[in-house]
Image 1 (cartoon, rainbow, N blue to C red):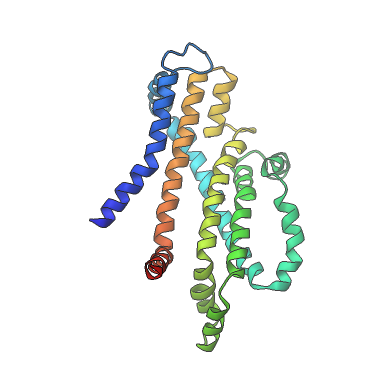
Image 2: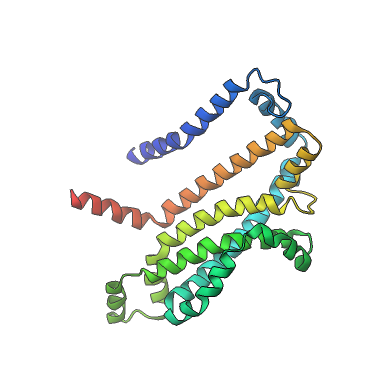
Length: 264
């Protein structure tokens, strides 16, 4: 019962502010006659025709989610692998740090024209744009997490003969996992933004493509439906990431709770 109560409380806390903002938007735009800011009631009424009955969910939203998933998973593989390698070696870290700082300072949207030259205008370019932005928070957080592994635990693992893959998984990855998950959460937020940006350049489908097409044809109400749908997708993905975090770091949250209980 306590778990159900905790989940219910967390869900209410997550939904209260969005619901309040939507209610405020509804009230403030109820009598709006502005072409560029239609009433929220009109926007919500158009969602069914624009996205559900027209087949845009499968034609535009699904490809966007697949690109985001592909780019995010590739960024996770690169960021975690390179982060563990760089964080575990002081010499490698000193060697790579100037290049990493230089590349990290380049805004990913600037790379879109360059990637279009090398990868064309298809899905490959869009996935690479997502990777180019997602990888940095994952990589840097992984490096910091590996660097912060407790020396006492390192010595204990050495004394017990924990080496190779067992040491990597049970000591390094598990100790750095809170930082890694923080990087995943930040990378996902950046990936959603870059998913939309990449689809605004020479695209033929996608959520970003639909929003920019509505804007260019002055279909303002339809454009607002796309923006709301994008926000909803971001919210749902954030909730899924939070569930993953609770599942993957259950031991970590349990340890913190035990430490707080012991300090009282």
